[in-house]
Image (cartoon, rainbow, N blue to C red; front, side, top):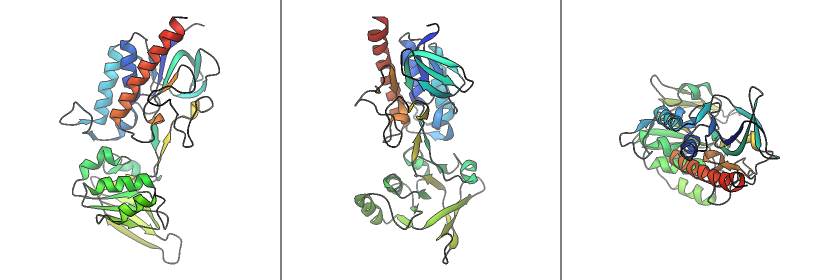
Amino acid sequence: MENVLNCLIIGSGPAGYTAAIYAARAGMSPVMVEGLERGGQLTTTTEVENFPGYPDGIFGTELMENMRKQAERFGTKIISNIVTGSDFSAHPLKVTLSDGSELCAHTIIIATGATAKYLGLEDEKKYRGSGVSACATCDGFFYRNKNVAVVGGGDTACEEALYLSNLASKVYLIVRKPYLRASQHMQKRVAENDKIEILYNTNTVGLFGENGVEGAHLVSFKGEANEKYFDIAIEGFFLAIGHKPNSEPFAKWVKTDEQGYIVTDCGTSLTNVKGVFAAGDVADSRYRQAVTAAASGCKAALDAEKYLKEEIINN
């Protein structure tokens, strides 16, 4: 079959770019379909201070642009398009792009990431990168000795609130239901933390501020007789209501867990489909950090190179 690529990388975040760098240096002539959000979720953050090698920090967009240039330097071809479907029933592997065209490849690295779930408020878009975040570990440092709020009632929300309590002056935990869904152990830790105030039966109506978030408009017992609107003064608004892995175009073929995260063999990037590898947040429901995504991109490229040599070139 003509025009069969050695390596196709889908997604352009830290995992995708790192995979491209390694695959290109290995002579695999990788092609990358960068997806809807060039550079991935890091482009929605402001300054990144926890990526090694940047003692003074670096803007997320700049970090991703540096990775992109490095991948291109070694010969990666980058296509501005979106993968909408796949056919992994036979080799070579096929994907369909948004314009209806197809790409065929011997190996495919899926690095499409996971999208943070938001409440759907217009203010979330307005203040994204200026007070609104979906990653306390990434951005919490910027809110030392400030008041912040975390939205959510599960284990992740409690973990984020506890993490932020080590940095912030006060943490509001905004919980839609009259109870926490988190484990008993996590509930106990939150309840015993003097810096955390839990606001049960509460929804966020909006955010306000001149040059960034300065507060949130809230409503408690919405739609009930004791409904009450009130404001809280905060400078950071953290979403912790879950992530949605971008695995839909491959879900027919690649094994996923109940949340949609791609399942890989322990410690590797291998999926249940030969020649298909997964890297970054699309296969990581736990860490979701730029540095771990980059590391998994390296592993995926090495796994793909090994497969290409053993299963394709030598056969």
